[in-house]
Length: 168
Image (cartoon, rainbow, N blue to C red):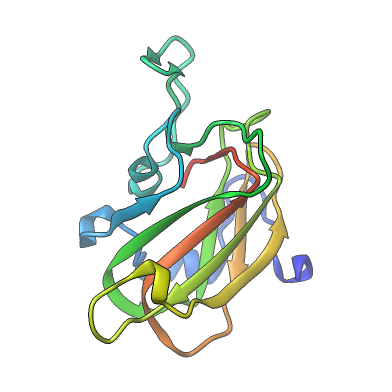
């Protein structure tokens, strides 16, 4: 499904990223509900509305400070994921997965699933719907994926394979 990915220049964005509401915006109240691992950088950082930054001399208790979500390298089979509750339920027309400033520590692949539970959210019992199949990512760039689904979603699960960092 990589053929559906929209490749753009450094500052170009597809129409859905320029003209539609970012349902994953912290300003709307979007929040991280679950994360498998965010040892190096908290998952909530990827929900910020600002452009990601790189601060070469900034460090915290876990090493180099990164502006985004970053998990530890996996030593066992599997992958990392995070579940977010959107600040507003809505139809998702496209998604940006941004690896800017993550060069050697970006995830080589990612996928996205959505769900709209009708009574309370329980990750273990939800029937997640694929929005983006497992797709290749590259380092230090914005990846745009159109979504052709007219259903509304309130929760998303971002899977990264096997691990790494996502700026936004």
